[in-house]
Image (tube, rainbow, N blue to C red; front, side):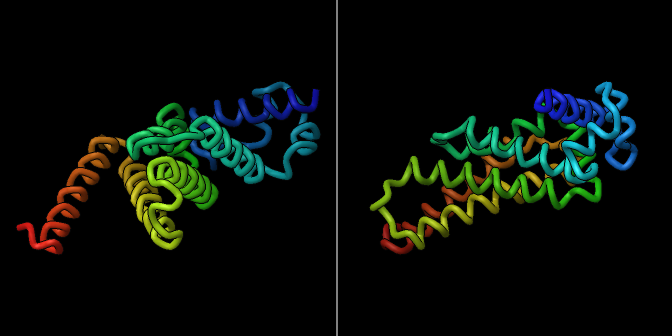
Length: 186
């Protein structure tokens, strides 16, 4: 029963987040929506911020578990965007609230795990040293994270996937030109 109550609380909170900003949601709203009393809420969560943090962290773990083997950066971005696309209003309400840092921690973790999975699947362990592997993971993690934050800052209106893929194409061309210069193949 306890697990069902916790799920009901999270479902009500997500439903309400898709309807209105976080600062307009109260514990009373959540308990009324899921048909429990305040004591039941407090049995499971310390307060509203702890509920939001739990929901965000669990969602990060679900996304990471759903994509154990990533083979492209496009797939990394799709995975990182999955929850945001399905819960656009809720994500914007959390992003624009005092709980933004919790959301940014979630996003950072998701980007890091997805990019690390991609790099580890595409580049064999002995192909490059661990320092270079870490640099590559950090670069793409930061790119994914930065693009997503910028997209959210703009109200999630632009075609993030198209921009990200174009950035990868441009980067590939630039690296190709640099490689030509280094090898004297201009």
